[in-house]
Length: 151
Image (cartoon, rainbow, N blue to C red):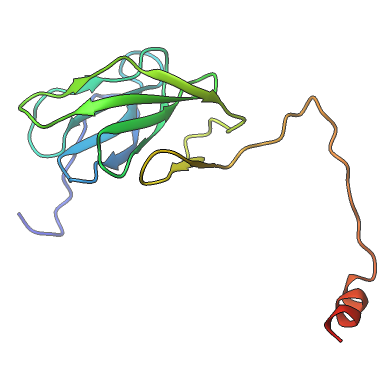
């Protein structure tokens, strides 16, 4: 196989997007509509083995923890979910997804969060709660103020 040959990794006949390769390069997590709604699936990166659905109530934007033993995703209600993953054998073994916390991340088909390598912190591109008004602050003559501060 040439490096310039495109290979279809997932072909469910539906919209399959947001592929994320596990840190060890063995597994591919992705979002698919094959069940009729957005869900997160994992399959072996090489080969034609079946996929395993790891989300249970909708899912989007899968991201791996640095050691590949946990997969995070956004549920359709914007909750951040975690699934324990054991792919050390011939089959994938997972536990039921656990809700970590609610977010204000927008579900948009893009990646709005990234976990730290140890999975203890998350950087989330969140949209403010629109039910609360946000003050608008305008700073006039900021350049002159900056010059005074620099002296």
